Length: 100
Image (cartoon, rainbow, N blue to C red; front, top):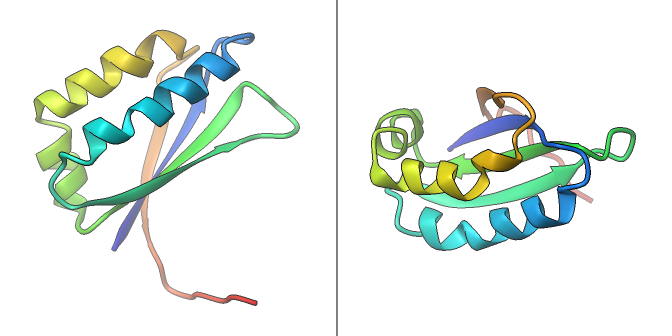
């Protein structure tokens, strides 16, 4: 399992609309090969900064299957107007899990 982590700076004042758009994007992601879910986290110290964590089965599911599809175009059309700057994206794999 791969986690895509996107740090997204949005235009101040558009937080609620951005959150609603990301919520709507579930219908887009559900069509994507290898997509397993996402979480959107909002910074407390910087309310216009978000981290979007998306779970993919493989790296290729994100960088090839999704990024080269019409689903990506639809995603960017839905949320892109909120971006203050291009998102910073990296991929991680889980190496340690702990829970209560």
